[in-house]
Every structure is written in C-alpha cells, then in structure tokens.
Amino acid sequence: MGALSGFKIIELTGLGPCPMAGMLLADMGAEVICIDRSTELPDLNQKDMSRRGKKSMVIDLKKPEGRELLLQLVAKADALIEGFRPGVTERLGIGPEECLAVNPKLVYGRMTGWGQTGPLALRAGHDINYISLNGALASVGPAGQKPVVPVNLVGDFGGGAMFLVTGVLAALLEAQKSGKGQVVDAAMVEGAANLMWMCHSYHAVNLWDMTKRGTNLLDGAAFFYDTYETADGRYVAIGAIEPQFFTALVEKAGLDPARFNLEDQMNEALWPELKAELAAVMRTKTRDQWCALLDGSDACFTPVLDAVEAPDHPHNQARHNYLEIDGYLQPAPAPRFSRTPSVVRHGLHQPGVDNDAVLAEFGFSAGDINALSEAGVIQKYQG
Image 1 (cartoon, one colour):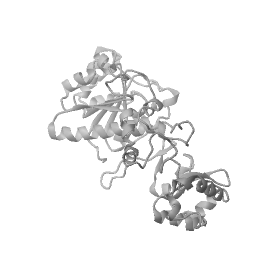
Image 2 (image 1 turned 180 degrees about the vertical axis):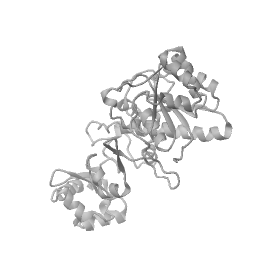
Image 3 (image 1 turned 90 degrees about the horizontal axis):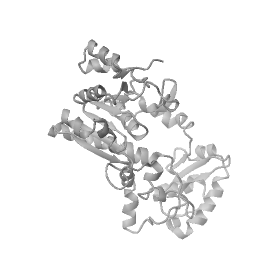
Image 4 (image 1 turned 45 degrees about the vertical axis):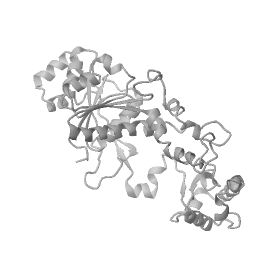
C-alpha cells in the first residue's frame, strides 16, 4: 500500500510534465485515472513510461454526456490534474468552477509553462522558452559561448512536474483539515526560477556573477568542479569542493601538491591554468582506470555514464534503481518510504481498457455503462 493509497486522481491526458506528475502520484499509491481523448496511442506514446500504474478511460468530452460523466467522476475524486493552455477546460465545461461546484473539496492542479495569467499566458512555448526567462538557461554553458540546452529537464520536469506534485500534495493535506479544495496554478517558468535559489543566494553576497556563465563555483569554471575527458574518449566528473575532499582527490589521483594545494584552490585567477593541467592528467588514463583508482574514496569522483550504462552501475544495481516493465527498462519509483513503499502496479494500459472497471467502482450499473458505450460517450481500444 503506497503512501497515497485511497486517493483518487483524475488526469486529463496531455504531454510531458502533467503525465510525469501523474506517474509519480500513481507510483506513490494513488489511483490515477487517465481520461484519454482517443482510442489510439500515437507511436510516440506506445512505450510511454509515464502511463505506468495508471488506469485509462476514453471519454468524448465534446459530448454533453461526456462532460456530465466526467463531472460525476470528479464528484468522487480527490484531485484533477491537467496541462492544457489556460481556458481550454473552461471551454469544455470542466474548468475549476464547474468541478469545484460538484466537489468543493477537490484539488484542481493546472500545469502550464507561463501560468494561468500574465502577458504570456496564452502564448505557445517549450522548456527552452520557459527557462530562458528566469536565468536558468543563461547560467548553463562555458564562458564566452552560447547557452547550452540542458535537455528538457529543468523546465518541464524539475520546474514543472515536481512543482505540480508538490502543490497538489500540499493542497490535499490542507483539504483534509479545511474540507475545502482549491486550484493549484503550477507554472514551469516559476518552478524553474525556484531551482535557481542557490545562485540568487550566492549572488546576494557577491559569490556568484549571474550576468556571466561558466565563471562561477558550480557552473564549470572551477577546475575541481567539472567534467574531464579520459584517454579512451569518455568522461569523468569531479566535484571536490570541500578541503577534505579536495585533499583526497590530490592524493588519490597522484596530483602534484605543489600545484594543487588548498592555498590556491579558491584562487579564481589560477583556475584556467589548473584546469588545463588537470585535464592533461585525466587524459593519461581511461575512464575505467580512473574508476579503479578513485572509487571508494572521498574524492567526489564518478564516471560520466550514459543512460544505457547507468542501470549496470553497482550502486544502481544494489539499490534496484531501475526496473523492467513490459520489457522496457526504466527508473524505479522515488523517493523511498520505510513503511508504505511505492510500487509500479502495472505498465501502460491501452486507452479505454478500464472504462467498465472504473465506472463500476464509481457506482455505475452495468446498464449505465452499456448505455454510455452505445452512445459513444465512452470508447475502448480495439487492438
């Protein structure tokens, strides 16, 4: 039984952050019911791991009967999450006003890039656009070069899905005390801005120049906090900031203590030349040779693994950090719970496969379900 066992959450199916949020909630035990708009899955979604653990219904929300059916489900749900542009669910007649009218305790989670209001609220965008307006994108990349796109992790998932989950869980907790629901307006541009809190803190005390990238302690400028190519063309990561960890790196890697010493470590003027010298040292051995030399030490050293290699690393193996579902390897649920462990109950369910079971659970009779099916209000995958 997961930590969220007993909670019913309706997810209006979309792309990216909202489905990830639903996946995390399902992993933690919530009954997440995807409302799909079609009986078909696009090729991109045939292996969509974010659908794991979720049930699927196909409801034609353009039909008045479909709208009424959804509101009947909402009346018995704890939360609804959606990731459409502002105004879309309102036009369908299933916006916050309608949903909270049938269930005043409902948490209505909304995931957008720009937020529900503001000059950009209705404008299209993607992760790269959202993180360009809060300093996140400008902070990533080498000095004097263009910003580096950090995959779509910062806006979509770090600033998006994670903040939607946080907001929904907080609102669910509050609803248990007040008996009242509310709308959670999660915006990727704002979530990703919060991820920049440490940079703002350092900047406030003149320890970080937010107008320049690749010149600060944690953005690749420091020779002791960067990645290095090895003799076999692979890479290692070094993050030896604190004195004891820096000392361990110097000793274990056999670096010249006359050049690599604590007195000079934080002398930014020396960083470029020390980085060049360390890079030359790192190229003298293969990645695996460096691992054999530095593994088990406190040098804050790790190999840079690609996502195919990662599941085979001994630590990931020991922690069972990856699992196989329906023949596909994927990250295991996180975080870990001591008493109510998260589990993946099943893999992807085809659209509409759970129509009958969900409706029966919500109190619909077999006759009601059959009538909805015959009217085309609910549909089912026929593959």
